[in-house]
Image (tube, rainbow, N blue to C red; front, side, top):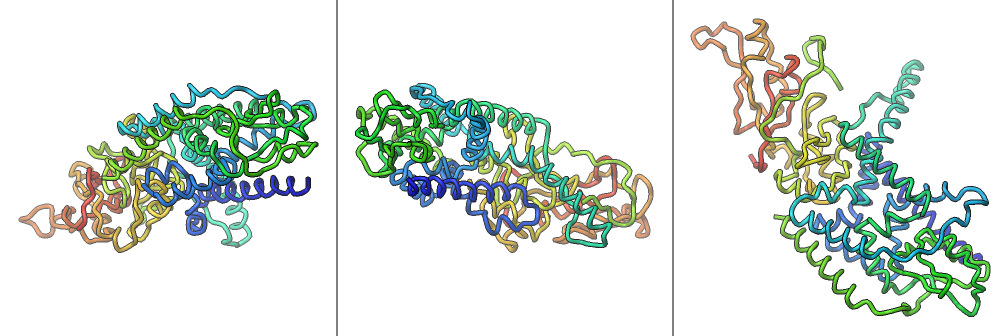
Length: 494
């Protein structure tokens, strides 16, 4: 019995480590977490599929074929979060044994998976991402927990400042909008209620990753097995099963829904359940096998096809907030390759937004790219030395680049708006845009070619501009900058 309890404790311990590290990956604004734990985002199942990271997908499937759905109970942060809400629902003697066996809703599971794959195939991945487990967890943390974390940090920064200490410093929350906040709130509420009442209902009925891995877990080498010679039919295992997959009446376990949590093993007083090798019981599933292989084939084929601070310089006071210009083409980060590549790979997990130290990335509110990242330069610019977003993206929507590569990628070009430029509207000299352009793409020239002493205005060399937004951010014109960046459909190398 001690060995079985230890098995459960090992599973819980590993799950907590993964959960804490991945959560910190979304919260950390110092850049430390992504260097240590960034790999944990890249081994999430759906991001690995979209990134065509075949090695990771094979390893995850192999782990499932050996150990069962340990991905769902250890690696997936949304699964661990549901276990927490389920634990809250079972607090007290009255609720401790509240679960019960229920037949699998296979029609709902397969239909949801089919719709999910179809949405990916037709390029509407942002809709599919609404039920993707890792991305859903990322949105919850980024939109609901991160603001509280940043507020706490800033509070400590104020206290430290009063004590002449610089152990903490002020920072800002990642870019948000009301739509992603609503999606995060709804997602958390639904998941919390389902987990509090019935455990892993989402994982075993809605989650497409759970459905796919459930197919493989039916054939896992190690699995919980009931020894009927020891079982006294008390039903305690079924009342503790968060997957609602143990049928005490006929001593069977639905391995497609079992998440290998080990709760049944640790709570069986008769020692009738063991985690061991045994042939699966029940009917063959040739038709199910064909459905899943076909579904996975379509997903792989579609993924392969789609693989083709607020400071103002010069001592000028901030009078009002900057407004976002009406860009004809949105801006996406260096490494995204193109708008099409980003939209066809991104699951809107918002890890890049959470890790952007410059406050440049925020979720899109447009329907076609809903919740996917885009750049805007009202509160910062894309510094040439920063490659944070490319380091953390797990899906291949933003490929990894180094600093040298970033400085040569043109994601857009600057556009000058004569009507907003301070030298012309107020007669004052400026030159902020030219002075701070990291690639020297802006030159100040006389506004009147016949008068060399006339006020100087900027001229943009579009062939040299990389679209970093330093000019737009540091332009003192309000509410709209006199120079702004237009994005490029496909990024160029200059």
